[in-house]
Image (cartoon, rainbow, N blue to C red):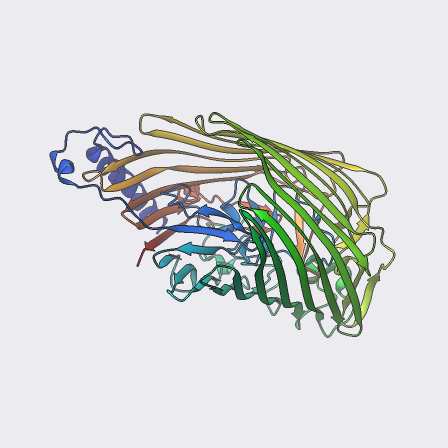
Length: 630
């Protein structure tokens, strides 16, 4: 069976390469001329009058075009791989994950501490509201190894003549996995209905966001020397730590009503009143009803959480009622100043106890263009009531020319520790109760240089933080530093091209004064590919190899009981993965074909981002995407 896969993959690669070379026209994919095909001269260029601009809830006045991204990284369909840096995960699509790049939480206020599904969530912070003159339909589907493993994405927006528009963003990840007890099922939905009066003085938006994540946990494999042996060809035959009923469910809800009313307008200046009412619900539960407190395998995954024979359960829920009222004074993109008060009534519930909190925050900000090429942003968030002493203040200044853009940013914060760091229960018993944890405090500096012509981007970040909270051992217990911890990250992205041969690289290097988080000091991903337009310039195609490398100083592990990644203190092998990909685009229709982990075709090549959480070897993946304008 394996030899057939090898032959089929080699044949597919050579055939694609031959077809690609045979159809080269001598044109650059981005050029509009060149070539000798007379048929192309019959094409009449018709300007596309479609308008697809979008904005975010935190700044509705600033609009960006919804650009057709051609085929840039189209084959990187996994949400954990779409950014310049990747996320570590448990070897299955949609599984719990954490960023390779150190990203400490700096926002003051309520922090629940459950964010292991961050790259998959659709939330109000990343939801796009569209300003368009034609309906938008953006659909994508990615199946693998049958109907039980797939990812679906859908985005829809449409405006109506009476000022009403509808906006929907949807994602579904369903993965049974390839080892026992490894399934994930994630459903994310973002939706909004907007009304804008004919005079544009009043805007009303009602929004609803829902993120559900169900995951089964096997604790990783027990042996890595069985791959390829007789009776172990199917990965479900590989023994795993836990094969029974370990599973979790995370739920996140947000229902909001937003109102914006223009109170006064003089010339280009506009004074606007803003109000937001929100109901927010978050919950997390984990259970395993089939454990053995004397079993070595269960001890590997649960450690000190094994407190009784009946099983393990943990449960937490928080509900919020939130109101925001504020004012904004603005003059187009030239200057916008806002100030407001945000109050939240918070109810936290564990299995045996509950606690109520009241938070009140003063939010202020400024966004302006000092000159044609200079942009300035600053924000202040100051806590009161139960969150008195919390604050975060930040600002950024960017300078742009026709050649380059350089930006600097600053941030300082002091915030209340997360709920699950302060208190946590298992089976109704408090394993830790730390209400007196000191508030983390830190400062961050950053600078970015972008050169569009050379397709270069360089980013440098430096942070110094005290009272940091980190997690260790099988119980993922929270500990706190007393000294300052410094972190430096250096991120470079570069695109190079010679004729039809392209090379893209993204490199991340991090330095920690003390290794508390187990994050890799060095990682990079790059791809080498051929790109051209073929078939009378009607098809854009890419064919190449995508490589990812992650160097670890020590390994990370994951506790599903309290949803925390923690350091193991043990050395861990690098992650080294090669994919063969073929992308092509015809009009608004795109397809990718990927042979993931191509080295696995020629041997038993498996990789792991976390100890024992081995990936699924070499797999073929297909993906399609339609962008429909009506």
